[in-house]
Image (tube, rainbow, N blue to C red; front, side, top):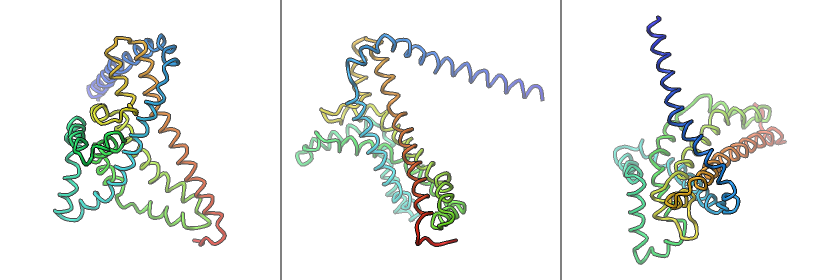
Length: 263
């Protein structure tokens, strides 16, 4: 009906206007300021800080993703197993600041003080922060799927291994990779725990930007922020290409096996 169409049109107009005001205008402002700070960005290399953030986020995302599988299984093991899984999620639900302060208290103990100059405390804290999301993603993605079972059968067939690998990637591999990427972005964007627990010689890039914010040099800050935001995109896209090629090559190799079974 006409009134319904009008309401839909008004809704879309509100979404577009809100997106422009909340996203496009700030991005344009940052990009304009970044033009003047490009020379400073070239002079002041931030690759070390970006590399530290990528290392922390990738390690924590991998740990959280691997730990989420047994914890997901515990949710199906009755009240005791479910209680253990909930207890594992509690630190992450308390927030980054609480986890960072708890981690700081732990590494100040005499027996654990040697960990303060290693990446272990920060990676552990980020892993705890990611666990609730990782478990939820595991529960959603690990549900039984007849099509996925068929794709795995094709992978083990010489005649259909290449097609089975492609299908397996679409049904499972790509989804799991993007789930891992979400965890990676969570770790990369963390500030509170990273500021508290990072080693002295491995400062995450967002912590460096936060400290630099107080100097009032908006152009240099905008340029560095742009570079810092491009880094995870490059990592995720590059990783997707590598993993996708790996899945394709694996399918080709399986189809070329002389001893492979035929369907």
